[in-house]
Length: 107
Image (cartoon, rainbow, N blue to C red; front, side, top):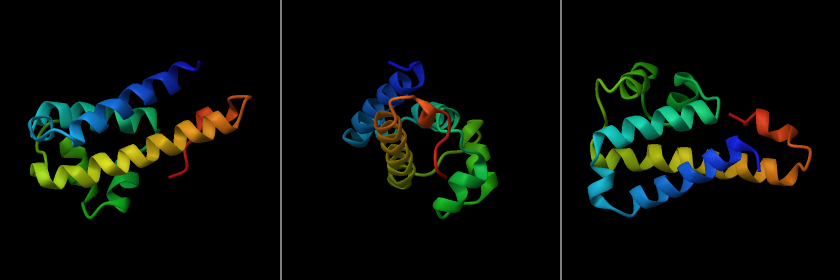
């Protein structure tokens, strides 16, 4: 299996566990790590995330660098956005046996 897909599946499980736990949802370091890994694996930039959520590009940049994080209840939409993108990336790769779909993700 493609290493990127394995990493996406691991991150998918981590986000699902985070969404089901108030303790994990409140973890600032986990949020920063998940945002960074998700954006990297999905080839998303600050604008891609900001355009899909009601936040500014500078807010996304601050999250990535650990300078700030949204309140725990506001982290859910971010996690859910990344989770949707991950599921799409996994499905795209699974539907394309050549693996060609593994290099790009629709933004």
